[in-house]
Length: 405
Image 1 (cartoon, rainbow, N blue to C red):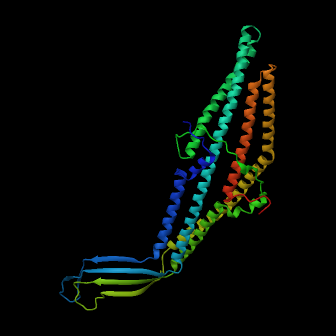
Image 2: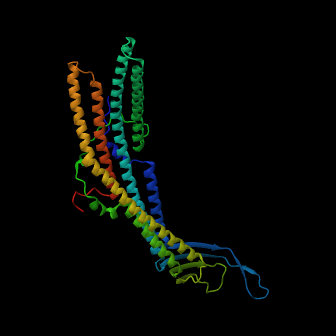
């Protein structure tokens, strides 16, 4: 029973399957979520049970050490820390949001990788068919010349020339066949199915290639919504909030504290079995620790600012490159490849007619050129589909209709 051909839609469904790239991005996101949860828990109640085995000695002359053991249960809750925990939590939340956007970018890249490798398999199959046809024609020419050489009708030099051409095309055909397997291996890896090589692939229609391309100016207006820009913005915001949190280290903290204690060896009535109060803690001097941490966070913020600007410029250049490539493929390459394919179809029909009346024997070569023209036509379509997909992934949204912003 023959398996159904693999479709592009089915292959793309593997983009969400477990894969090292995806697992790494998910792990980074989960780490950021854990940091966010930790930052949010800094103001939670803390409850401490403390037991002491100790002795004490009175100041009365001649008194001995006596047991003064105790057990205390202390509960503490931060009431206000003048922005320290709020900014720490905000920074952790911003990092988590940045990692979430990065995870979406990895999924988009996984889809593009699978699409590209799917197309490479189809092109490798077409290339192998064309190279096989060219090799067959070269062999027939060499075989006929070998017979003619035995009859002294073809020189040794001409025979060796035909043999050399045949050997060259045979090696090219063998390389094409190896590429058929290699591209399938790469596709299986991209789909996270190593070793499960698809035999037949369906050639997708790619209707999206026919849509009108928006102007570069219209696309440039969407750069600020790029997932990479949004992710970088979140990292910048996290750095700003960390700066504020470090500055707040010099501010006081206000805590509510509750304590219950048991002092079995004390006979005095004022042993404070229950205690409740509000504790104000104000750091007056911390050495150079806070200044050093503040300087580090400021340097980190400036570094992120520079990286953000570099990223924006890089995205703009990448978008221009993709847009230019798509424009050239749509307006020039597609038409040229179509005309070449139509010409080769006509030439093949003519060669078949001439072959039938035995006027020429170049049918095999015409068939090879026809396959090669189809190869070029599909190559253009695949390149166009990939550039459009890369632009959408870069902008984080479908391309707008032409003429809109």
